[in-house]
Length: 224
Image 1 (cartoon, one colour):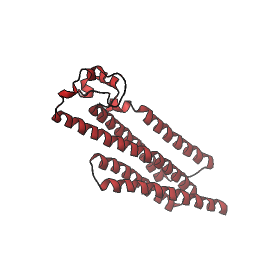
Image 2: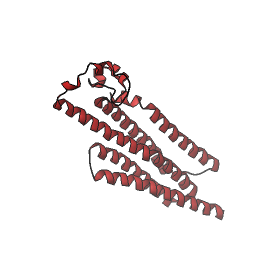
Image 3: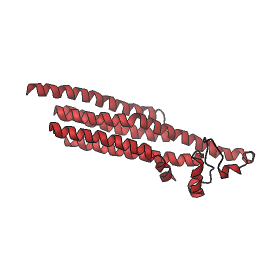
Image 4: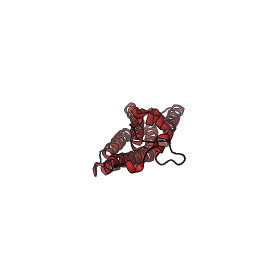
């Protein structure tokens, strides 16, 4: 079920992957042009964080797809997957147009209050995961762009302090984003706010490190 849900969002994941690939390609080409010596650990951490955050987003999209099946908000034609996938829930909620065959024979008056409780809970879970995905899309792309820019500037500066700062910040970004998803999914507050703040601070610090490293790189070039 979750796999089918994720396949319905391949356009989102493909767009993100293409953006990440472009950023990485630009950084690699830039390093070759100016013959930067990239700190190995910093490069490995940045690559690992990029891969892990993409996988985290893909898993989140898969879970979101499953929640939509349970909430009945998939397009009506998705009912063709059968009860094994839909869980017997009528699909098409939120879509206009002719009702699906399953919904056409359904008698709303036959629903009991106890039967509506699972539907309300499924709707709440879907809304929760929709917001998790929206928050990821707001923060992960710009965070990874900042991370690779910071790595590029760090390599240009050839300063160990910049490399250390980059490593700490990129790990903070990873922990913050993964922690935010976990806390949001498990209704943990204020831990969720702390995790979101940690990720944000990681990106802000990487942006500052990027700027500082670029200034140091310019000073080093002026000395030559």
